[in-house]
Structure formats: structure tokens, C-alpha cells
Image 1 (tube, rainbow, N blue to C red):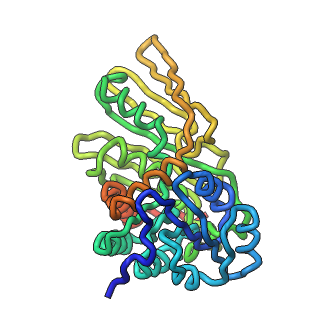
Image 2: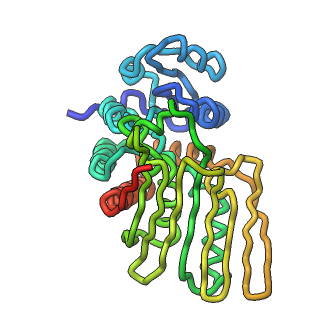
Length: 336
């Protein structure tokens, strides 16, 4: 039998969070956002080592807990945030749902489309919110871009391109361990893949793909993917972790071009600039700054309070996982 939520929040009361793991992203990005949110209370942080959990709670509050199972058993935890390495998500998200907890999990939600769909169905059946922390679509920038495209800023959309690359990581980084961290496609490539789905529609198919794999570790370190919609709009995606840092996207239209830099990881104070070029005319539009991680937390809290209604986000996560699986299946793999 499925477990009923152990501590569903009282209407208007803060959602009580437990943090399942002490990853760097929790320290740098998510815990500062969670502790600042007026409708959230961080009540516990769990680690396999109590001292590590205490380091987090000394800064962010809550009580330290040794062991993930102990946190899931806590009756004063309504929801858990899961920042564990990618290939551990499926197991612990499933355990959290069975314990009756709402779940906000780092991306990728799982390493397979089938597992992602199964967890989404499990959350829905239990009336629990399950949200994958793909944060960038929640920034106001992308609504601004979508509106400009809809109003003909560059004419009819013909093609889309997105890039996300980061410098070489230390050999000890979890991304170099495919069975734990998943590699560059699951950790970095997800950003341009999701952007293509957001702007080119859910019917994208893989035309071709190349994945570069490390000869010693077997980890995917870079890749290039060409997708196409049923209407012939193409999406050219490039990603990797052996490059200079860059994240950007661009749209090619029948009458112009729209480009934006720093689209996936803008700091909260950063004001993105949208560039529109039409023949001999160029304009720049500055978009308001925003914290996309705070926006995800607000969306998650709303889903918790509405009884787990986050189906729009859940469906996007499933389609994203399906497209990643199609890329993996179609890719030409090159050992480097």
C-alpha cells in the first residue's frame, strides 16, 4: 500500500523541508533560496555522515540527521529536496514518495525515460508533487523571448541553436563517473535539450547526434545533436565539459535573428539582454533580473498546496527524458 502524506502542511503554514544529501548545489544555490522563502521551513538535513549534515545545519538551520532513511521517517517533514548524484535520484525519489513526501529533485530526475514516467505516475497516484529542478524555464527572460517570437520579431521561426559548455573538471568530479553522475549529456546537455522542447515543441525527433566519450571512464564529455520538428524547424544543440564556459541560444527566422547570452545560469542580479537583428537594423532589450531557483521553489510550494498538481512540469520532464533516450540510442559515439 502507498503511504499517505505524513505531515501535509496546514493551509497557510510553511512547507517543512528536509534535505536529502549535502551536495555543493544545495550549499551554493538551493538552501539559500529555501531558507529565504517565506513559505518554507528547512527542518532537517541528512547525510551519511552526521558531521557533514551539522555543517549544513549550522549555517542554514534545522537539525542534522545521519542517514537518508531517518529523514524520510521524520513526521515533521512535508517535502524533501534531493540533490544527490544523478544516478541515485530514482531510488531515493521513489523512497521519498513511498514515505508520503513531496519531492523537489535535482535534474536529471532519473537516468531513463521509463523510470521518469514511472515516478511521475507514482507521485500522481499518491497526490504528491514531484518537480525536477530544471530552473531556467522559470526565469522571466524566456517568457519575454517567447512573446517576441509570437509577435513576429524575426518572422517565422526556421531554426534554433543552443550551447552550454563548461571548462574541464577535475578527474574526481562525479560527472566523470557514468554510473553515479551520468556524464555531460544528462548533467549539461539537458539544458539545450529542454530549451529546444520549450521553444520548438514536444514533437522533436533526432536527426543525428555525436557523443564524445572519455576512453578511460566511459563518461560522455561532450556532444552535438540535430533535432527537427514535424514542420521542419531544426534545433542544433552543443554541450560539453571540456570547453570554455558558454551558455546561449539563438533563433533564426524568416526576417531576422534573436540571440541571448547567459540563458541557463544567470545570477539573480543579472539582467539578460535580448538582441534582435533584422537586415540592417539591430535592437537590444534588457529583461528584469530574477532568481530562477526561487521561482522553482515557489512553483513547487504551489503544487504542494494544491495537492500535487504539477502535471505541466511532470509532462515536460517525461518528454525531456524520452528525447534524451532517443539521442543516446541514435548517437554515433567517439572515444577520446
